[in-house]
Image 1 (tube, rainbow, N blue to C red):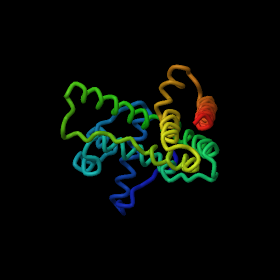
Image 2 (image 1 turned 90 degrees about the vertical axis):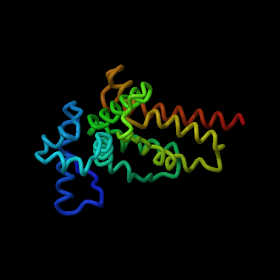
Image 3 (image 1 turned 90 degrees about the horizontal axis):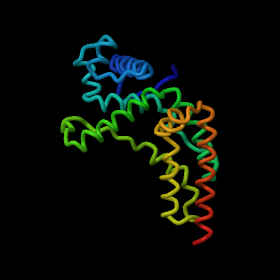
Image 4 (image 1 turned 180 degrees about the vertical axis):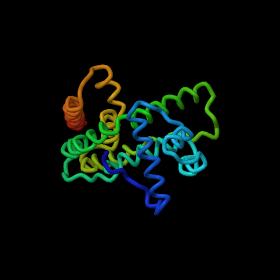
Length: 208
C-alpha cells in the first residue's frame, strides 16, 4: 500500500493511531466492506471511544480516508501552461491513484447516494454530518486557469463542469461496471473525451 496523507494536527501516539485507523479502513474498503466507526474500532483493535474521537461519524471516516489516500492528487500542480496539456497531466497522474484506492472512493459514492435518498425521504439523521465531495472544483479551476482572458467566463465554467464528469470516481460506474473497461482503457477514453471538450470549447468561442 502506498503512503497516505496525514493531517499535521496529529503527532506521536495520536498520529500512529490515526494511521492505524485509516490503513485499517482502507483495507476494509478494498475488500468491499462499508465499516461503521464501531466496526473499524474492532478491526483496528482500539476502543470505540478512541475511534469516535477521530471520526465522530461514518462520513468523517470516509472523508478522512479518501483525503488521506488521495493526498498527492490534492497537492498536484501542473507543469504546462496550456489547459489541454494540464488536463492530460491531471488524468494521467490522478486516475492510477484513484484505481489504487477504488474501494474507498466507491464507499464515498455509496454514502453520497445513501444520504441523497435519506434526504429525499426526510430520514436523514440531523446529527449525521453530510459527506462533502468538492475537491475537484479547485483542481479543475487550476487546470483551466490558462483559458482566462481568452475564453468567456461562462464557457470556462462549462469546461470545468464537463471535466468534472471524467475526473472523478463516478466514471468507474459507467466505464468499468457497464462497459467492463480496464484501467488503461479508462485512462485512454477519458483523455479522448477531454480533447473533445477542449475542441468544442474552441469551436464555441470561434462562433461568438
